[in-house]
Length: 202
Image 1 (cartoon, helix red, strand yellow):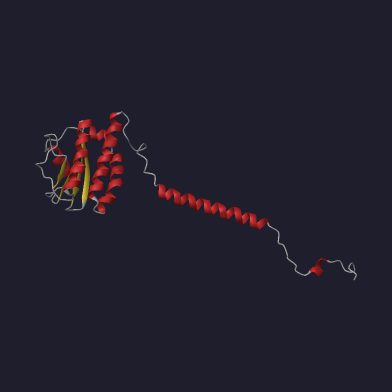
Image 2 (image 1 turned 180 degrees about the vertical axis):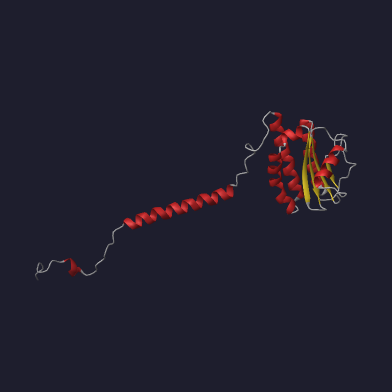
């Protein structure tokens, strides 16, 4: 796995997997995405995992790691700690503008479920993708915030099932109404019942 000796563009490391949560292929995939963000926006989006917080809180550990390891003034930093199953997102410089408190909470809601299921690569990719979206929007002068967060992904399977259920309910209501309007018809099988008394002579 990657250690502090792995650098992107001869700068501070964008991925430090000290807890060894990722395979080599996963590390390469994630690092490629983080490097692209750094190159495109001149900002550091970082992922660090650790087994030991050295007696610090996740927040203090994340802030100190970012401040003392040569990162850009502008950045977003995700720490995942296996020591206390905790995580923290730290922001610096323009990262504070791009990823507001509301944005940080929203972002975390999207990836913490994967973290809890140990789908760490998916969680980190989701984090990186949201950082990319948030930074791009902030660079355009309109950062995401409380009343303007990205829409949830639309679940087409769920929507199809809901549509089918609504259609079934409407169909039942319509057929029930039509059935209620039908008049009862009595079937009579004997011909004598249709002949007027005294009208038939043999």
